Every structure is written in structure tokens, then in C-alpha cells.
Image (cartoon, rainbow, N blue to C red):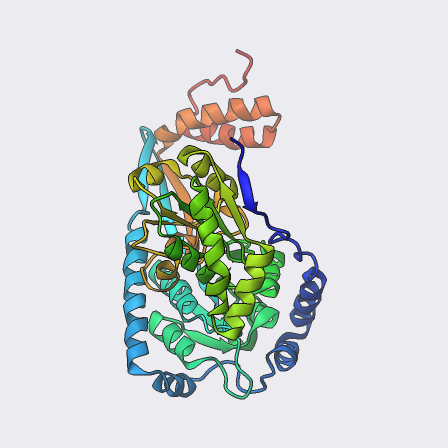
Length: 435
């Protein structure tokens, strides 16, 4: 049967995407031209902060001292998990070399980028975990300099827990600046910072648009939209757990889509009945976000069987994908498009968001169909090299000359010719592609 939408979104994650472009473009141009002074001007305007923006060692130490010991322990626990997982990821990429033909060696090297800029949201919510996820992976990758940038609170500065997390995870500098101005400061190397080679980390629509515009001048982790989550659930799933998980992700923002895909109509209807009361029970700010996200962006879809459910999920390519269904191994083998996969009721997106070790900076808006999330590999350049003996270059030179002439690229051909003439002056070569 066709997919049956018991609830259909009235808006999409792209509904307001074009509204911020011109504003962001203007701010970036102003700061590029005006440097530190212009960035500080925007910081006062948007952050409502006129304090020191590049935190000193004493300021970092003072902020860390404000963090309760239990929270420090939790941050260290999450950092250790993220670090160990990143180290395992890094071990999957190694320098290699091979002999292409006798005497001609080609190789691969993995080289970390020099400077990373890690944006850590700190306005509506203090995203402690984002500091852990972005800074730790950059440190494991081997970046020489890591800047953590987070919006300060008026009259206070960056949230102490964010400062502590960024500090213990390895940030070399902590910038008390938010939004486009913070992204620009890292990109253009303001306040004595090295210019970032890559920008990573989640942020609001202005931060995301700034990264989109700057992509090419610098690398970015991905072009991200609002966070999104999809749950695949069959009749064996617990409706209350499913509904709670949907609401937990809807609280991210008013435009954060959540989707339920199931082959059990009764489950779908039960979840839809439970969600409003769960939203109503949230604190006010969280409630407003979750209510708007559920009203405008959420969808509930009934499919004929698990194969159709999997196909539907792959079409959505969600950032977070949860399976609360029987035969988890089947789902693990079948599903192909997701940022991060959570198999079984015993785990949840919230675990991955905060403490399990897998990264929570993930592709949104369907981008999981072609890319994965932030990892230690994003900070590394996979480059190649080659060297050869004169004899080893002989067959390569002959093939290069003939292919180049067939393509009409005579200069390329002559770069091969000159080596054959120098290294093998007594030999004759057919360097055209006529035969």
C-alpha cells in the first residue's frame, strides 16, 4: 500500500532558508573589511557583550572553578568516550605506499589541517556537548591550533561549563563571541588568532549560513540545517518511549523536524495521543520549541511492512535514526542513509548527543544520503605522493605522452618526452597514439 500520512508537515526545514542570506553576507563583508573593531561592534550589537573576547588563562581558570565537581566528572566522562572513539576512527586511516610498476612508488599521507575553528552554541542552550564533540576530535586529529568560539551571556561571558569542556578537551584559545561575528573572527584570523582552515560545529540559521557562504575559502564540516530525527517502530515498540524520544528531539528548535515511521497504525495513533501532554509537561522554553516543531514539521507515516519502512527512512535520510523494532540486525544491514543510527530501545539519540562517544555533529536536511557526520577524518587531508627510479618512470612516461597527445595536451606530452630523452637517449619510443 502507499505510505499513509497520519500527520503531514506544513513547513519544511528550508521554509525560511533564504531570509538570512543577505544579512549574513553583509556582516561577513563588514568584518572582513573592518577587522577586529567591526567584529567587536557586532558583538556589542548581537551578543550584548562588551567584555574581553579572547579569554585569558586567568579567566579560563576562574570560569572552570565555577563548575560543580559532579558536572566536571560528567564532562570528563563524555570527553573520554569521545576521545577514545575518535582515536579508533583515526586508526582506520594510515599512511600507505605501493609499487605501481617496478621502480615507481605512490603513496598516501593523512595530514591534519593546521587550524580548526569550533563553534559551540551557547545562547538559548549551553551546548556543553558540542564543545566536547568538536574540540576533542580536532585534538585527536592533530590540529596545531584549536579555537573554541561560543556566544557570551551579557555581563557574564561564556558559560563556565562550556569553558571547562573546551579547555579540558584541548582548545588553545576560547573566543567569547557568537553568531556570524564569531565565525568571521575565526575565519579571518582576528584578535591574533590563526585563520581557521576548517569551521565545525552546530549553530543557528545565521551561523549555518555564514559557514555556507565561507565554504571554499575555508573547509566546513557540512552545510547544516535544523536538527532532525526519525524513529522506525513496529508493533512491539513502547508508545510512551517512542513519544518521549520524539519530543526530546523536537525541543531543539521550532523548526526541528521529527518523524515516526511504522507499520502499526495503532502504535502511530497512540503516539500521536501521547505527544501533546509530554510537550505540555516541558519547561516553558523547551515547550514552545517542541510545540512548534510538532505542529509544523512533524510527520507520522504508516507503511505496509518493514521493507517499505526502511525505504521511507532512506528517502528522508535523517540526521538521527532510531530503530525500536524487532530483528535489529536486519535493520542494521538494510538501512543506508542516516547520520547516526540508534538500534533498540536501550539507546536513544540523547545518549549520542551527550556522552556515548559517537559524534553529534551530523548531516541534516537529507544530506545523510551523501555524507556522514563530523569525525576525526574531517580535520585531516588525505594527500598523495609519488617517487620513481628512472627505469620505473619509463612505462609511465610512454603512456602519459600518448594519452596526452590523444587529448590534445602537447605540453603534458613533452614533459614526459623530455624525461625519456634524458634518461634513455639511445632508445626509440613511439609517443603518438596512432597505433
